[in-house]
Amino acid sequence: MTITVTALRADLYRLVDQVLEDGVPLEIERNGRILTLSATPLESKLAALVPIPDLIVGDPDSLIHHDWSDEWKPM
Image (cartoon, rainbow, N blue to C red):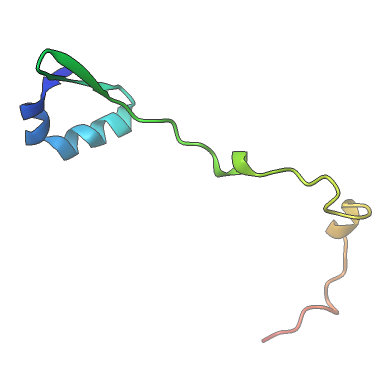
């Protein structure tokens, strides 16, 4: 969809929300040139995690069956 800057100004927030919702870029015409408003994809916060292979020393499965009753104290 191509619109003018005047049309963009009249309905800016709705048009920006529409681009964010459906991901379809919006073309804006100004003085014979085209600007494109587009949304960048969201990156998963988990993608930024750095693996630490030696974080757990020992058998990780032993953590599942650990008896925590001596460590836990009611408040």
